[in-house]
Every structure is written in C-alpha cells, then in structure tokens.
Image (cartoon, rainbow, N blue to C red; front, side):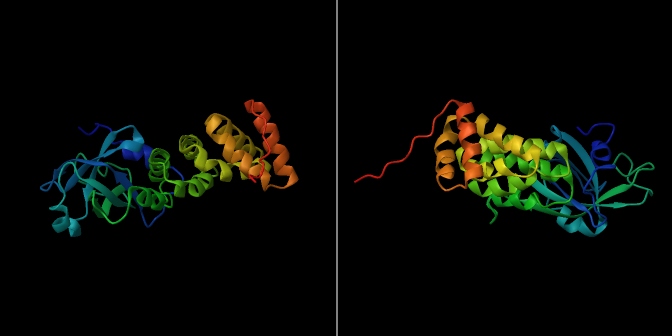
Length: 242
C-alpha cells in the first residue's frame, strides 16, 4: 500500500538535477492501477521499495487502460504549480503537483537489453533514476558499464558516487584497466577511490593491473607497483615463449 505521507515529495523536493521539462522514474513493478481515480501506484526499488501514487494526465487515458499491476514502467513526470489535485495523491495540498505526462510499459522482450536501458538511465536528470541505474549496472556484469560508472564517480550527488564505487568493485577485473588510469588523476578523491576499488577487487585485479603497468608511463607504473605492494603482490615480468 502507498505510504500515508507521499514519499516522492521528499525525494524530489530541493534535490539536484530536476528540470522543468520533467524527469523519468523507473519502476520494476506497478502495484495498483485505478482507472476511475486516474492514478497509478508504483514501487521505487531505488528508494528502498517504497511506493508512490501518481496522477496520470487525462490525455494518457487510452494508454493507461493497457497498464496492469505487475508491469515494469518508466514514467515521465513533470512538476506544475500547486492546484487542485486528486485527493490522496502526491498533488493534493500546497506542494508542487507531479503529474505523469508519459509512460512506457517495459516488457521483458523489449529490443533494448537491461544494460542498455540502465546505461540510458544514467543520463536522466533526476538523481533517483541515476542512482537506481548505477546500482543495477553493478549486478549485470556488462563491461560497457565501466566507463559510465567511472563518470558517475564525479556525479553531483554523493549517494550516486558511492554506489558507482560499489558497482565498479562488483564488476571486478573488467573495471581494473579503466580504474587504474585514475591512479594519477589530479583529483585526490578520485585517486583514493581508484586505489580502494582495486584493493577491494583483490586477487582478480592483479593480472589486469600488471598488464596496464606494462604499457603505462613511469608515473602510473610507480603508482601500480606501490598499489600491488600494498596488496601483497609482486609483479612478475612476462617472458616470451620461444
């Protein structure tokens, strides 16, 4: 059931990245569809599984009839000035109205893969959508996520930076070459994060780290040697097979 105090007000109000043209929210599960009240209740896994009730724009009524509980959905939400909203939704009261102006039902046989969907979600303006995408990418094992996750290490939202850090660790060895390049970055925080990520990956990081060192400049080689030493490994020179 939806919480009595709508949660979307707290997670969106004053948060960075919200734009006037709206933002996307991703839900793995539609909990309830109320055609008469023209509302949908959706579960937000990125916000600890809490549910929210959203008013659906009147122009979407025909498409809304196709939505059913259990569907995955991406909704486009816009903010409007306070007005008379449907009682019990996020829009009643004096807060800004948040109204669904578009939605896509995400079927399991969609053309886009799960990884592609989440990579696209990383570009969304709403921080909650990016946070969810970063978390999911860490579980999919798709090497295409490495570059975008490294970019997310500099996201304006601290929670997203932390989850990008965690996801790069989960990806393991495939993330090591790109992460290692940050060991000589000008930013102290990025250098520290890179060192910690590699050390937390542990033994699977040793071989790709050694490979990076072989083609690195002197500054990066020195950083990698020091890091391997802290991890308890000594790089072994590769010998050519005759």
